[in-house]
Every structure is written in C-alpha cells, then in structure tokens.
Image (cartoon, rainbow, N blue to C red; front, side, top):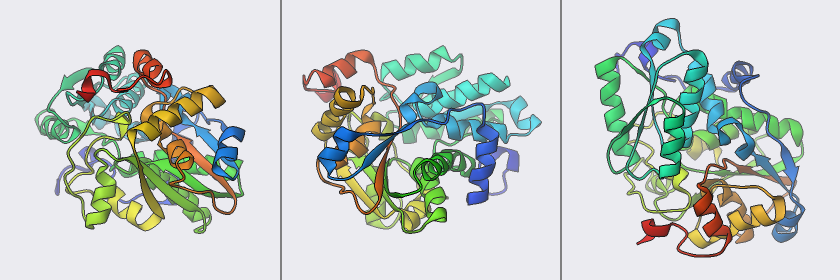
Length: 342
C-alpha cells in the first residue's frame, strides 16, 4: 500500500496517548461511557477484587463502536463521498455501518462464510452493502482490498488502524479514571486493536499496571504469532468466541508490535471454560455476554490468571449472540456450537 493516497490509507502512523484523548473527544456523545461494576461473586471465586467493564452495554452491543466512530470522524469530505469498507466477523462491521449511516456515508462490509447468521442479519439491518467472500476473515479481507482499488473506498480495518486503536483506547482512560487503584486488566485478544488501545492508555498512566490478553484455544492467531516472533497464518476453527477469529495480517503495522511491547501475558482458555464463564456472568451478574466477551472471566475462574496487587478489571467486550445459542450455552447442553461442531 506504499504510495497510496493518504485518504485511502487508514491509520498509517502508530497511535499515541494524545490520539486516545483526541478519540475521546471525537466519540463523545456517540458512544457510551460504559459501567465499571464490582463482581462480588467473581471476586470470591478469583480470590481478589474484580470489576467488570461492561462493553456489552455499548451502542451496537460491543466495544467496536468506539474505534469505528473515531475512524469515520477523521475522514475528510472526499473520503466520505467515496464511501468506506470494513472486514468483519460481525461486531466491527456493524459498528462501521452504524457510524457511516449516522454520517450519511455509504458503507460496504465484507464477511466470510463462517460469520454466524445472527450477526449477518444484524449487518443487513444497518442498510450497508453486505458481501460474503471466502471461508475466512483473511479471504474476506482480500476481497475488501480489491474493492478499495476498484471503487476508491476507504478501508476501516478492524484492528490494525491507528484511529481504531485510539478509539478502543478510550476504554483504558475510563478504567483508570473510575478505578485509580487498578492493578490488572484482562482483555479479550484477537487481532489486538482492543488490547493495544487499552494497554496504551493504561501503561501511559502507570507501567506497573499488568495487562493480560485472553484468547480461545481454537485458532488464537495473535498468541501463535507472538510465540513465532512474527505474524503467522492461523486456520480458523469453530469456537464460541467467534468474534476472536481471524488472522493478524502478514504485514501487520501496529498491533503485533504494540501487543508484544505493552501486554504482559497472554493465556488461552478452552470452549468449556468459555461456556462456564458465559453462564457465570448471566447467573451472578445478569449480563448476556457473547463467547469472546467471556474469555477474561473464564481465565479467572480456571485460575489461568490470578489477581495481583490492586483491583482487577475484566473487559467484557460485547453481547451480540443469537438467543438460541445463548440459551443452549446457559442450559448446559453441548455442543454449544450446534451443527458447526460436527
């Protein structure tokens, strides 16, 4: 993408703390300042004070609204006129399409054939142009980049975009303001946009704050890439945490380096642990969490992460899950993935 017009190259420069503060101003009044609540049940189970950052209560039902709103707010008139395109497992595309509709910008969203039908239906409801392309998020991204060239659209990347990362970083600002004594923050980890932004904000306040990323065992692309020392292709596998699926990109510009530098630890949890965490959140906190949003709770319940000094915060990233699948999970009726598990 070297030599491309800057209006079509999203977030070329690495984000800074200043960018996170700019993002907070840009998204004010568009996204919610979500609650940070103490979970007594999880605190007792984990052996230390634990709070939940409830991004499942965010507009569009997930944290992605922050990054999308910031990215679209930064577009110039020419880019808005041409339109935008997103690649998504569901939540990012919904956030981009919603922000685009608010601004009167045409939006195209590319998804793979693996995206659950409930998330596809939610995307269609936004009025975006929806394209299903390929068997993985990486294949859908190939088609999206072709459309950037063919139609002059601006790609709003789901994670490897400085403006998106800065938008997600506003979560970190809210955590440190609402809980100054925070010691550990546990964040779902996929492509790294969420944890990179949160870690940027938190470690700028205090490098002693521990940041832990959690992924599912099935197809954890960032975890495998960190182990390899470089971005590596990772096949997608059926998982309750479908929002965490997808690779990090062979030519990753921001998130791989930021996660390697700013994140203290990465752990993996299995499918039964994720299901247990979803049930725990519903039974004890009356919160509906999708699988990806429950991985931090799973890590605490299975003692993959232990609270350190100071309070711990779990970022509950979203609540967009089909009712049928959610009821199957909380009803303890495996396989939780239905026919997808066959």
